[in-house]
Image (tube, rainbow, N blue to C red; front, side):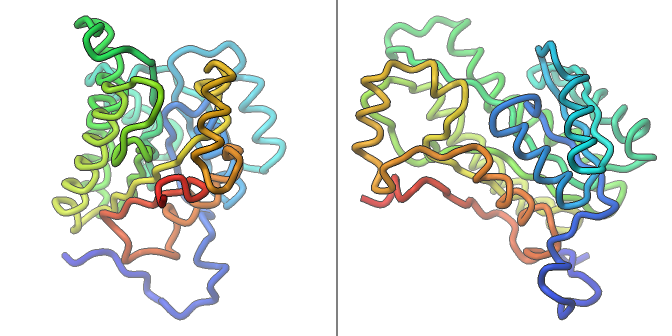
Length: 267
């Protein structure tokens, strides 16, 4: 079976961005980039289930977004590092929330810590890689099995500009390596899954999330000097890109990595 193509590729362009009737799942969806992805997909018409590991206000978030977008929003607790747990959770979402299906899965959960390479121990190294790399794989396995059964699906992975460069002056070898691994994993899956799914990556630069705001002020000043755009990205500026990748507006796009970074990676 060839890569999916819409029945009418000539329909008006804005209608191709609609996610009306779609069921979406977003890991790491309770805050930061993930919360904006949930918002954007719902604003485009999808019903969205988001997965979180630890959060205290998921009920409030669901109620607020549901009222704001008019779509169903539901939260599920799970852990992307635990293969059987995340597979069971996504299957549960398909059964309970999606009436037997899931159309879009966004593997967005991620963590970062600054550690000198010679100071890593097994726990600190494993923590970053288990979320950013293993977690993407186990999320992808759950999604891919559903997509193959359905005959069609769409996986989007949040990678990072760190997949292709070494950020300075901070030291984050595990983060950089895990994001590079996630990117190559996405490319591999895109080739393997062409008969039943598209797989693409989004690689943001510096985004104003909790990970960034916890960094020392002097680091932020140095980063701004490195960004031609002279500012960091608001998470809300990313949601339209995820909608594009989730929609029929780019059905021939698979295996791609879209960098959105204020020209940070160009100089």
